[in-house]
Structures are given as C-alpha cells and as structure tokens.
Image 1 (cartoon, rainbow, N blue to C red):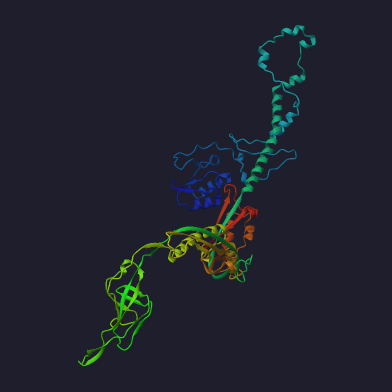
Image 2: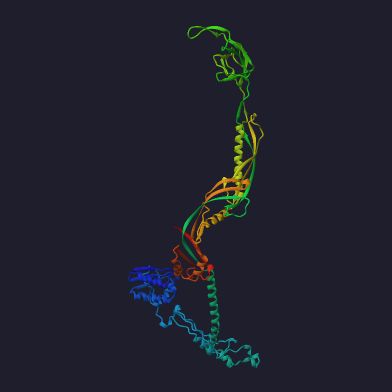
Length: 593
C-alpha cells in the first residue's frame, strides 16, 4: 500500500471519505480499530467502496475486528488482518443481494395482526428466517395438540427385527393384563412427523420468552450506560490580571466580615509558660587584705599658708591607688633664699612643711605592698604638694572567690525566656489549627523572674525561675479570601466575572498588633483573574443532545473563548452530548491575554 490512513474509533464516514479524497496515492490502506464507527454499518462500507471506485483508487481495509472483517468481505472490499500481512483474507461467498439487510436503512418493523413479524439476520449460509415458517408450524400444530400428554417414541428397527418376548409371570396375570393392543391415539403419538410438529410447537412457545429476555437485557444495559454516561467540556477563556492594595483590620469583637470597612473577625489565643533552671556563676572577687601604711605629705607650695588634705583623698603611686584615712593639715613651708631667672635673689618655700597621714589601698592584694615611693595627691600639682613613704607598705594579700554578677542574671533571663517563647510558639500554632498564624504579630512578655541567690553573693551556681505569657490574634483565611473577593468584584464591570483569587502566594505585612486589645492591622496586595461573564447553566442547556461538531460550532462565534476540548465518556457508547444537563460538566480554565 502506497498510503495508509489511520482512523479514530468514533470517526464518522464523512471524515473517512474526506481523508480518502485528500490522499494522492492510487493505492490506499485504511486502518480501523476494533469497534470503529465505520465497521458498524454495511452502508458505511458500501459508501466507502463506491467513493474509492469513483476516485479510481485501489482500497484495502486493515482491521482486527472480526465483525468488521466479515461485513467488509461480504461487501467486496479487500481485507487485511494486520498492516504487516502480505496476503489479504480469503473472500467469502457473495450472498444474494436481497439477502443483505442493512440495519441503518431498515424501515420500522411492521407487526401483523396475528403477531407475526419478519426478522432478517445473517447466518453462516446467509439464509433469511421467515416468520411464515412459524405460521406453518402453528397450522401443523392444529393437527393434534398433545402438549398435555407425554410422547412415547418407539424404535422402528427394534419392532421389526426383534420378536416380542413374553413375560414369565404373564401366565399368572389376568387375561386383561396379559395383552395390550395399541389404540389409535397411541399410534398418533408414536408417529415421528407428529413428534417433530410437537417439538416445533414447543420451540415457538419459547421464542417470545427469549425475545422478551433479550429486550429486557438491552433496555437494562441501555439504562445502565445512560446512567454512567457523562460529558466534560473544557473551555479556555481570555483572562486578565487584577490587583488591589488593601489594609485590613483583624478584630476579636466581630464574627462576620465587613467589606465596607475592611474588617474580618479574629480570635485571641494565649500560652502561659514557666520553668526553673540552674546556671553557673561567672563573677570573680578578691576578698584578701588591703595594704596599709603611712606616707609623709609635703607643702612646697606656700611659705605663708597651710594646706589641708581631707579624709579619703586619693593618693597614687604608679598604677596603685590609696586613700587617706584621716584629715591632715600640712604646715606652711619655711622661707628660704633662692635665685630667679635673672640671677636676682628671691624668697622661696624651702624647706617645705610636712605631716604624716595613714593610707589604705583601694583593693586587696599583695601588689599594693610597695617599697618607698613618691605619691601624687588628687587635686594638687605633683611638684608643689606631694607625698612619700619612707618605709615599705605592707599587709596586703590576695584571695579570689566566685560570685553571682548582674551579667549572670541577665544571661539567665535571656536564655530561659527564649526557651519559654519557643515552647509557647509551638503551643500557639497547635491551638490555631487551620487558621492563619502571622508570627510577626506574636507578643511575648515576662510575667515574673526570681533567683535563689542575690547579685554579689559568693556562690558557684544559682537557680533562676521565669514565667512568660505569649498571645496572638489569628483569623480564618477563608474570611480574608471572601473579603478580597468582594473587594475585587466591586472593582470590575458587570459583563466581567472574577474567576480566581490568589491567596496562596499572598504576602501579608503586619502593621501593628495588640492582642490584648483584640486588634491587628495588616496590609496586602490582593490579586486575581477576571474573565468575561459566562453562564454555565445556559451553556449546559444549549449543549444538551448536540453532536461534537455542533458543540464546536456553538463556541466558534465567541471571541473570548480561545479553545474547547470535548470528552465523552464512555467514548464508544456516547456519540452526542447527554440530554440531561446534570451529566454535562463545564470546566473553565484561563489563558492570559
């Protein structure tokens, strides 16, 4: 075959002929699947054969459908069982033209007053069963009706070849029982022709029952298939996006949405958490002895006045600080003769006045036990007022211990509350269920804290206890979606319809949150798709009972509909749209402009 045409199961004869016309090859093979529409009618095959002859093309049918093969061979079409076969199937003996009855062109079956009707069917000999035979059988049956009597059938050969053997006990029987002569009725019963007539009569009585059963099976099958039959029409329409900025208030004082004021109901949930935990102390403190001693204070500042050093004045030697333990007055210096820059004699305070005073180191530790050194006095010039220790200072020692510091308390507070907040978050999410939970709106607070040891106390560890409260407002995402839908719907024209709203990818920003007051403000960008308004009920009603081509024509003049896809189920049974609109489903999807 120069060209092969593959058919769909539901492809009509008009489509097949059109494909045959478009083929430019003089030899064409047509491949039809099992249960194809083409193979259901002899008329289809004859039309196809006639069209091939008109087009002067050699045509062969390739199918594995046994019924289709049989019909095609009877029509005179060359048939192959498989596209790989090299030899066609053997043609059948051509039946008489008037013995082929095509179901597609058959008129309504007339019913005679007597109830007889004519049935045409194919059999292996292409015979036609005529109901007149049934009438003839009814006439034969009138000869003798023995339906109420059993038929005794004798064997003629046995009666002719075998003599009758008398019963040994027959001698003792009465005369009336020894011998039975057949009556005329018995002879009629044993007649093979009459028995055949009786069998035919019984057969004719069964036929109506079988026909009725067949009709019931067909009707039940039809109703069953009709009940499961359905159609889906997928429509692709032009869609354009729509966006709208919204500021929404969530309040626990409402139960319904308020589209005018952009309010949706919320629900307050809380979680109280408490825990105690032991922490290590990290502070260090030297509790050794402080250095004590005496220093001499000198007044080289004035020979006319004394200088008083108050108790607790800081005196410093190097990086070590000490404090005077008593108030001390340094006497004025003794006047002396000195020489100025010009070489002239002047009076100077020399020698300086002096006085001893006790001092105490600022901290404990042996490092304050210093040898004789000079001291500066806070608030005075080191060259005019100063001090000296003439002997080494002593008595200082070092002893370091661990204490609790404020930093330890702060660290414990931060650590334990962080743990309590995490537990509260898990608890609140469980309580929220399917509601929308915005973690940014969560409010945490410390209710109380306590430590079993005060700051500055010598201790290696301490126990810290904290109690927290976490609260948040949650809301139903469906309520927010309803509010978005109402808001977007109010922004579109009457001939448009809001198809979808995008809440899965919704980005919500928490502006403010006060769970205890029952208020939370959020902002978002609502988005969706708008399409031309489509009346699904009208479409279903208009499509009911229409063919595939009629459905396509129905949508052809609608500019907003870009594409349709029709699915009939089951496809081998349903060739049109169901007449019941409940069995028609319209699925609308979108394509952006």
